[in-house]
Length: 514
Image (cartoon, rainbow, N blue to C red; front, side, top):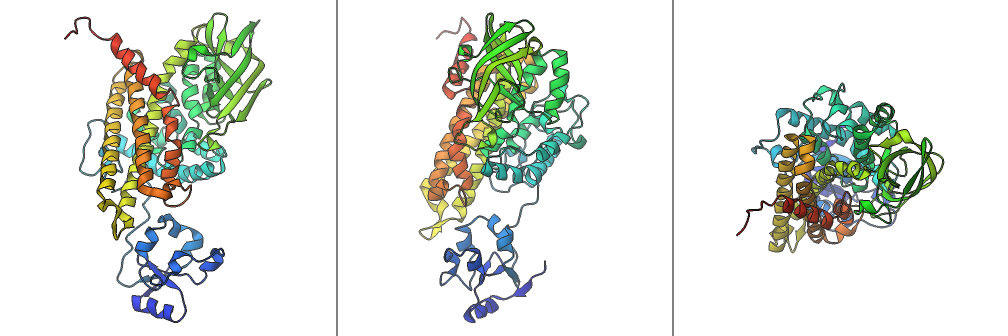
């Protein structure tokens, strides 16, 4: 759309003549009809001394840039100021932020990393572009309305094999075309998956992160590692294609981190198990078609794949984050499950469940780091543009101190995460199970604690705006409200910290004496 070129003198003249024109970042807006959009009362931009002048500083002290892009406000633009150029531009899809520490160092201009190849860079660019154009609008909508991710977006993700890639490298990728051929299945490694996990957490929509079929990420590995060939042939294609949904049903009101204390029972009756019990806090449970379920049997803990049907009922649990995650309370009322749906050996369910925890905890950690870095960027931007006592907020030493701590935390988290990921790339599955359980547990504890400290600092930096679901501080509000999920999901902080120390104690050499 072409706009007429105006001078500041013309803007001032029109205001003297009764119009209400303002200038924001070289653009001229006519607010004469603004009251039609906001019949409830005047806006700060009506204030004397702002109308007819450059209101850029005033505007960005109150609103996010995205406000100017909304159709109801964009239509108010009538011109541009002669000789001036727009300063704040809409980032191109897939572009990298120029704000210091807004991107990990391997994506920052002039910095280097031994872990990432040119293929990782191409993959990251394609993933960010897809997430921003396709997933981000869906994430924001679902986070607000609480509905599950739409089948349309699931299908688009499936077409690029994003669901399959989120489960990491492995045999399940063979024969698949990943991101339209950008990366071959045999090239795909844990750094590609780490890119996926950090990128999907960039929208400030923590509930949607789990609603983006995290149930499949944590519930499918036991099926392809321990399920029969017949079960794998049926279920794995359905889930990876996005036609069926899966949830991992382990936690109960009776047992969370204490997996051995599960009370849901499975009693053998001929060629079936009869399952009775309840599960709680089950991600994607409200819309799952299958449940990878931990049960207590006569011979010990056993894992079964239970299909939604007669005797299976789910109801949503209201939590601090959006209902789009599908968090559910599940009741199994004498559900008959074919014996062929047993995953692994009867009584060996604890091994099946524990074998899945390393990847799940590492995945949660990657998403946590991605979300935390966005908050660091938000705070750096806000502290630079917010004017208090006549000066930018970042002129205050106390604010710079908080920013310094936030930067230190995110960089420490990123570097430890990448070291662990590098080890995973160079170990067999058995080596990872033996050597990395403690490291990953301690890493997750560290990252989630850093996240909550950053959430507190960010809230102080944004002040009252950090308590508002919409507007300038909306990402900080969401993060402050939901960062605690990372401290609980996949294992509570204290439990994981203890696990890490116990694993280290097992490896203490007998001759290690002072």
